[in-house]
Length: 271
Image (cartoon, rainbow, N blue to C red; front, top):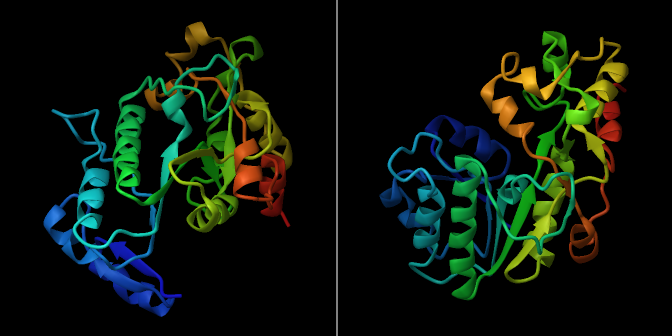
C-alpha cells in the first residue's frame, strides 16, 4: 500500500520520504496547487483545521471546500474520513450525546466545522464513502501541550464543582487507530463520536493529573469570577458540557481502545 501526504512545506518533503511516504506539495488555501490530487488516492484522510483568520465569511471552511472540488475533478476516492470536532454539538448541559443529536455550534470555530461537514456530505452524495469523526480534546505525552502538566505548573484555576463542566478526551494513538478503522470499515455518510470511556468533569481531570504528577491541585473558582482569571479561549471550553456516547465507535469501527481512560493514557507516560 502506498501512502501519500499533502504538505505545504517544502522543508518537510525529505523527512516524509525518509518515512516511506510520498509527499505532494500543495496548500489547501491555494486551490490551484491542489490539481495533482485528483484521481491519485483511493482513501483520503482529511485532518486539516479550518483557517482561523477568516473575516468576511467566518462561518465557512474554504480549505475543505477546496479539497472536495479538487477530488471531484477525476475519479473519486472510495473513502474519505474527516476529523471534525465534538464542539459542533454546543453546550448540552452535561447530557449524554449520541451522533443523532442535532448540531448547535456556539463558537465561530465550531460553525466552520459544521460547514466542513456539509462539504464532506456533498462529496458523499457523489458516491464517496465518507465518514465524519467528531473528536474531543486530544492528548498524548509526546505531543506539544498534549498533557495538563504545563497548565498545572502555571496554577491556572478550574471551576468549582457546582459550576464545572463535563469534558471528553481521546489519546492521539487511539485517534490514529480510529481514523484508519474508519478508512476501511466506516459506513457511508456516517458520523462517529471518537472519545474514550472517561466520565470526568474538567476540574476532576486536572485533579487526577496533578495527583499523578505529584503537583498541587489547581485552585477552584466560581463561574461568576472566572472571566477575571481565565483566558477567553479557556472560558469558551468551560461554557460547554457534554458526555460523548462512543457506542458507535466501538460497534461499527470495532475499535478497542489502548487507553480506555485519561488516567490510563497519562500513566503511560510515567513509565
